[in-house]
Image (cartoon, rainbow, N blue to C red):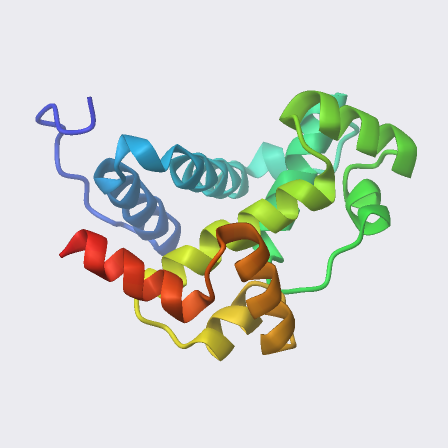
Length: 171
C-alpha cells in the first residue's frame, strides 16, 4: 500500500519536510520491524499534532489523549532521564491512574515501554554505524557500561557483538 503510485509531494516548509522523511522511512521499513514502524507512527502523529493549531491548545483531554501526550513526550525526550511522576504530570493524571491506564492501553508499564523504545532506537543507531558511547547518550544512558549491561540483558550480546551479527545477517 505504501508504493501504490502515490504522488510525489514537495516540502513547502520544515514541518512538511519532516513528515515526508518519516513517511519515506515508514515505507521502507520491513513488516518484521513492526515496533519500529509503530514508533515512526507515533512520531508522525506528534508532528501532525504540532502542525494543527487547535491541537496545541492545552485543553483537558480524555485519558487516551492524555496517554498520547505522555507517549509523545517519551519519544521527544528519549535521551533525558524520565520518571513515571513526570510522565503522569505530562498526561495530567495521578501517578497511579497514569500507570494503570498506561498498562491497560499499551500492555506494558511506562518504564518497560521506555526501555523497549530506547532499545529500539539504540538498535537503529547501531545499525547506522554510530559508536556505542554516542548511542548510549542518545537513548538516555550517561554511563556506557550501564547501557552495555542493559543491552546485553535484552539481546544476549554486547552492542558491538550485536551489530557484528546484524551486519553478517544483512550481508
